[in-house]
Amino acid sequence: MKKVIYILLIITTLISCIQKEDKIKSLEVISMNNTRPIDELKELVLSKGDTAAFNELEVAYLNEKNEEEYLLYSLVMANKYNYPRAYFQVYYCLTSVFDHSVGEIDEETKNTALKYLKKGVDLNDLESIKCLGELYLNGRYVKKDTILGKELSERSKKLCGY
View (cartoon, rainbow, N blue to C red):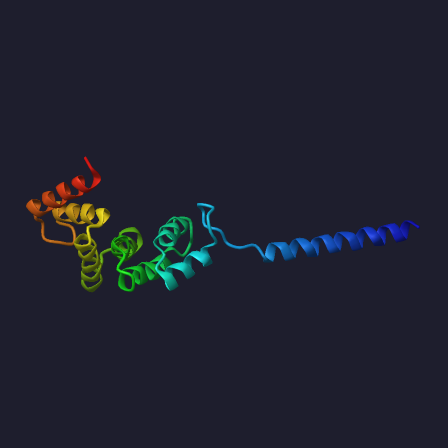
């Protein structure tokens, strides 16, 4: 009788472990802001240009190991859907890699990043305007121009409402 109980206990434990493994395998990756699964956000960005999904994806990638993957979605949102915020994100993705690990940015990448940033300014994206103004004030990536830098700074303040 004890052997039968032990065998039943072992079988029950094995079944329980198998069920737990199945549950673990079927878990979806959820963004850190606990909204929608990352794969769903990616699909919405690529297929529909969903700006809310793009913004959620930005937050999700803050905690990801492969944050450079966000460049792909930023490029799609900028080039295919002309979303103003995405132009800043392309600039940021291209330059932050150099700022945080690689070192000095090469001319071609810098020019590409600035092209996207300036397009964001043309589309009245607040973050792009603020950033380009700071670049001109500091002479970083562009020739120093305090007059243009101050103009952009004032423009961003007006957009903010202060």
